[in-house]
Image (cartoon, rainbow, N blue to C red; front, side, top):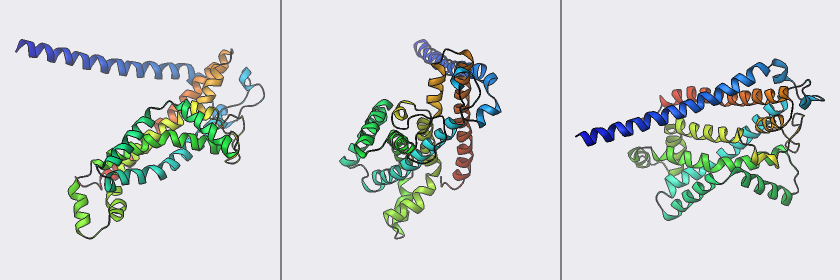
Length: 282
């Protein structure tokens, strides 16, 4: 018994230590961002685009990066959703546990682990082939490819949690697989589908490597899908690269804005998920 108690105490200590390290890292990161960024944050920074000499510490703001990030991540998430939902439906309702379905899952898992710079390089090559320059459209395509495996696998796992009896009951009353997917599966897995989309959005809005060559960077607001677009991760990168302390503090303020956007969308999504959960059959 003493050996079992010692093992239990050891693993309990490891769990507590791991939890403390994770929470400590979170507090340290957020504390640094708030401490350095909050004093530099102002209304003008949120409502103005960079003006002449902004990166030298003069007037202006990061409105271009805020709008660009929302356009890029929002467009990429919408495009990924259009592609991911049919993939998840096929894997669970049509392919089931077939060999081909497992191969698709393996491919998605591999794509999930591919570094984002590879997506950026592939997107850049694709843009050259299509005759496009760095633009909002190019960034959306690159981010959509980045988000696709995350969203598809998340939706696949969410749909897998539906009791098979529920789908069989739908088939028993004469519903087709497509009708079951649209009228039963979507309703029952709405919280999980929303979570998968949120995970993909969070990855997309925080990524810099995939949009560096595809979306470019500009101090102006994007006027169309074919004009360059700024993003908050690149704004942080460029501002931290300057030798001026005031501009470096603005980089932390940009990181704080980015964190606030992701946090705000997460809270809204959780609220929606609670409402959708009330319609789920347990």
